[in-house]
Length: 96
Image 1 (cartoon, helix red, strand yellow):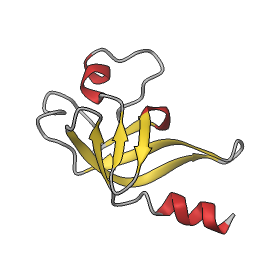
Image 2: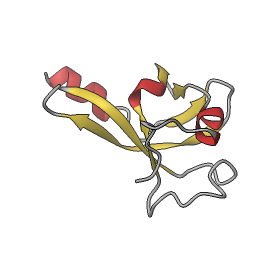
Image 3: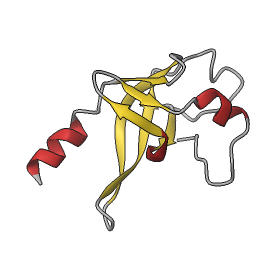
C-alpha cells in the first residue's frame, strides 16, 4: 500500500494539460473514495485564467473527475476539458 500512496502523492504539483495541449492547472490535491480505495478526482489550482475566466470556480480552484485522466507522466493529460467544460453533463463536477 505504501507504493500506491507514494504514486498518489506524486501527482501533487504536476501540471495538467488537455489532450489538445491546453494548460488547465496544477494538481493541488487528490480526492479519494476511501470505501472503494480509488482516486475519483483531482483538485486543481493555478488555473488557466482564460479557460475559467467566466466562471465562479470557488476559492481555490476546481475538481475534475479522475475518469477524465488519459495519462500520467511528467504531466497529467486529460480529455479535452474545454469541450466538456462548455457543455458539462449532469455528473460533471467543476467547482471546489
